[in-house]
Length: 187
Image (cartoon, rainbow, N blue to C red; front, side):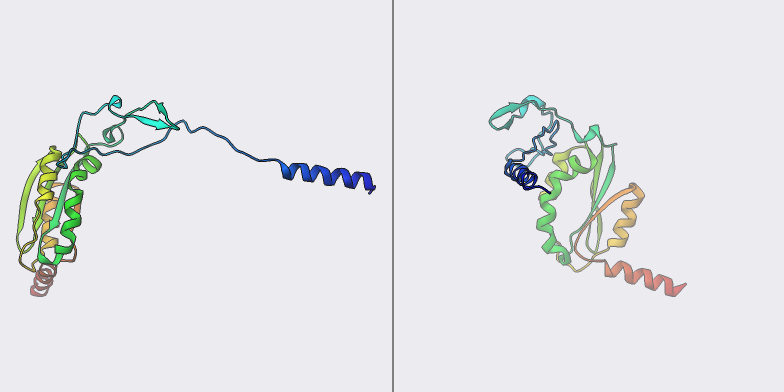
């Protein structure tokens, strides 16, 4: 190969390496999940796109508001919450998600019922579409002063009311399991 060709190739390689390579693109859609609550933690409903301002490099951008109901079919959800002292460490965390349950899982057209259980199973609230009722119930949850945890019984009761059941608690239910074993041995 001639020296002139080698110099030319070397200059070509150096000029390509010296170029600043940039890739620029535009993103036509950015999804920003939002849940809005008031000062007391209650859900704020009936918001429209004009209630939001989105800035991109200081410039306002068009907002299109889609609710979760645009994508989800209505759900009837039963939430089973363990309140025995076994789950006392989890109760503080469980209280925080009450405001989100109705919006995030059931949607505007869905409904939520809540069952609590320790050594007793209680229907805390029947099916409701009112997110504030559910948020208030979750916020007021208190641990019971017993070691009971009838989880299997509570889930059985919940599954008779709905095909969608959310179990919130800390441990498995030893009293329900013991009864199941004793019943199996008796037969």
